[in-house]
Amino acid sequence: MDKFIVRGGRKLQGTVNISGSKNAALPILIAGLLIEKGETVVKNVPNLADIGTVLNVLKHLGVKTVWDKEEHIVGLDASNLNNHEAPYDLVRKMRASFLVMGPLLARLKKARVSLPGGCVLGPRPVDYHLKAFAALGAKIVDEGGYVSAKVGSLRGTVIHFDKPSHTGTENVMMAACLAKGKTTIINAACDPEVVDVARFLILAGAKITGVGSTIIEIEGVKSLKPIEYSVMPDRLEAGTFMMAAGITGGDIMVKPRCESYMGIVVAKLRNAGLDFKFYKSGIRVSRPGSMGAINLTTFPYPGFPTDLQASIMAMCCVAEGISHIQETVFTDRFTHVMELARLGADIKIAGQEAAITGVKKLKGTSIMASDIRAGAGLVVAALAAGRKSEILRIYHIDRGYEKIEAKLQELGADIKRQQV
Image 1: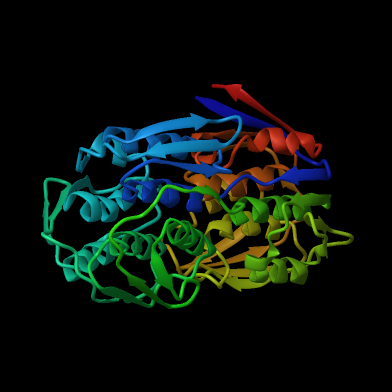
Image 2: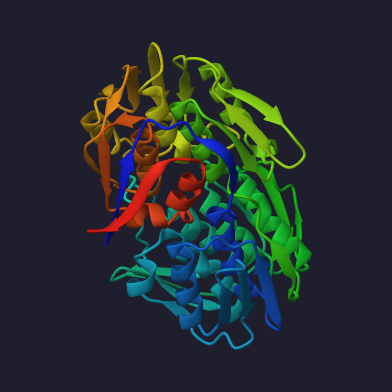
């Protein structure tokens, strides 16, 4: 088990290259299950623990996989898909593993998948998925921690989600690609990562319209073809580095340019006093003066992403004035607050709202990551803390950020990985 040792106080300067999106790569790799013949090549796949986990799930199902970590390329061949069960030992490590249910129902007409694990962020039920599969014609049985589903033939229908669910949208969209007739998803998730999955499927021969809107229509086809596809850049990693530049008073270039799906993030950071310049190859982010307080509410895309809430809260800890952050997506997403308080932050919680009174300086100490994004927020905070900070349980961070310490070192940060 490793930890980070961070000595804060250095302004970040230089260029950082953003990896491929974890939240797009995972469902795209799983979507490879739908392709019956030939090898599909997925490029710009980040070298992360979660990618290894999903590839282990695919291998268990009978998929041939080749992962070139240095080149960030994965080859998939699901021609010999022969197993319809994803066991607890694999699915417990990562919630996205539950996405195999849709493709398994489409290809094998049956699936048995363990109820998922992953980060503890409050209730994240899979009811949306199961109700949708039932509407598509599947018979669902939930027993012993597993969900089993069987279907003679998936048939298109209208699916109504109570609220947008990006994994629910992806799971149904994948299953509907090979269903008979047309499936319409009402109140679909609009996230760029969902759009990226749809683009992958469309290139493979799926008939999908309305992606990026709240109504998606999928006309079933008989089969999909193998393709080459490059995963979108990770907007969450990009945002994290922007906030790291802000909290340290830095000046960095974030490549590649990805502001087309980061509008509200850029707007909030500008409100705080950061400056943005847009070039063909990337975005230059700097903080020329002091930072001011901001107010924001997390919300499904195009709202402010909950996955950047911890990092922007860390930045607000040293802003002038009182910032207010309301969390509306997950009920237990303030676990980083107590750790930020250990660094000297002044944060008060009332229900799902945090009031952050800026302090002049944070002070280094031992802190612990509770999930992927909370861990990233603690790294951002530690970069501005005096003395030495020790960040434990960084295996959470490794699930979502590829070599984050190496990238920060290249920007001038004093951060090292050590074995505990």
